[in-house]
Image (cartoon, rainbow, N blue to C red; front, top):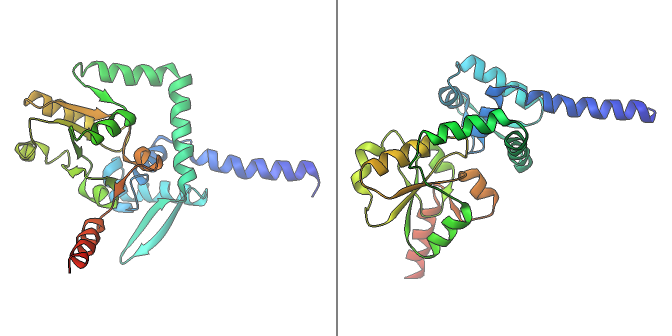
Length: 235
């Protein structure tokens, strides 16, 4: 193989990966899988696709080496191939906002409709956590919370928040977060909380970004293991 053949083959393989990203449904699927492994049926339900269509998009992503799958009982579970896939998605997201005015305008127009929505950065949330001045609520579905969440966050799925709101204290600021900056579950939660007398704001980004920054997280089972160690230590 000469140099030209080598370079053509290399760029061809790279273009196959980027081609897989050229679909809005597949980008949304990557955003969803950044929360943790998910079955095809869960992906379909959360992206408003049929199971057959979700499966086809997942196969395209798998053939492009962007996701991996494993069998768990009767179900196929998919996950991002590695952390670089999430980093690539974040880079693409930043590129879109910096170069495409329509993306930025859509986002700003949507947020302007929610005039009282307060946003806080990751750095600001870290400071508030150190001062013990906030309660953090994860408004994603419980399955995603179990896959991983900000340390000491409480699970209040957006669909349950109205019925469980009275469990939250009014003397502290509530910070809600969800899947990321393109996810609107936290926006809805903050709007609902503010309308009911709470001081609420949303984390600018989401759990995957928090985790990628090597900030403290927990997963299902961590609490049990912690309690077990504390119990053994007290014997």
